[in-house]
Image 1 (cartoon, rainbow, N blue to C red):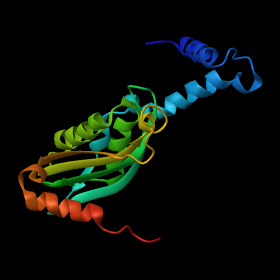
Image 2 (tube, rainbow, N blue to C red):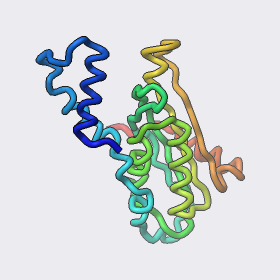
Image 3 (cartoon, one colour):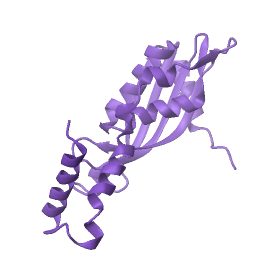
Length: 191
């Protein structure tokens, strides 16, 4: 792992690759700003799924779908270091314990705030739900627009990639999957 000084120097070298000099007033503090932003953008490396999902509550017999939909996220494509953003829909059917809803958003953040591909985020969130909550079923659906598709290459501004991971009853039982999809497609709450 590089030291902070090496990282600052690396950003300066990249700036000089893009623009002949990094001495211009607007660029002088850019290496520091970039490294500080990296600490936030890639904070997922410092998060632990077990810690995020360990605080559970008695489900009091609830055996229906728990769904948190439209979880907005931002991530960085590991192939081109371009941003991608979208929304995740995370669901599970508890056995006897439930988790606070903010934890479902946090587990998405844990995976999104790393160098990633969308498929790995989807699988990782589903894996963590299965491992730490032991639900009857877990489902993750992610829809995202990718900067590497929008600003380079094929330059398709409106393309949206969708990935899904269905586990347990969401994979095995069509009715559970259908109910989940109906819940995801229901109208948003009005303010």
